[in-house]
Length: 279
Image: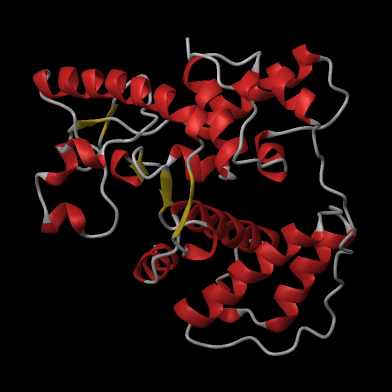
């Protein structure tokens, strides 16, 4: 699809790509499968107004749909959209973020075990977003300098954040288990991960190198449809979100807390009560 190619040329993230393609398909279906090349401002306004007036979507959702269509018309069809005079905008409410007390953070994390606990502790202690934590590779962690390097974070920007001292030992032990898993994969003829951009062609052997492995690998390898190779992806975010929601419910906290809530509570000091061994 031309839209996917245009997004990949400009190095948009995979999640943005999937969302933009999804919005374009909804736009075309809304207009009875008409060719989008024959549509313009009036059709875009009608679709976006339908989202706000009939489906009552949030302002951020309508803005995402608008961004997808603007990108498609500009970079695929080669023309810019003019003013959308008839567009009905969804109202943007002012929301106060959910914040947990230190005691509530302890109660939630106490109900997580293994790597789920470690992911939650990183979100809280390093201020990471969930996908930033799950996308970490071994080379992104510096246990000596206590640094976490976030690659291609929000806005496609890199940054360095702190790794709490209280997590260094647990992460070291976790990486030992991950390395043992990687060595077993290599012995079984697998052990490769997907590399960003064109690095796979530039460094053909890098995909099986230890430094490029995921810090939080998935339990089961996948089969790459293009190459037929068995590769291991990182843990899927929905698995972590599901376990976190269960932990919040089990703790009895009457708040709509999510994994991202820990980022609002980010505290690089991490209380000693949180620094418990990972099971």
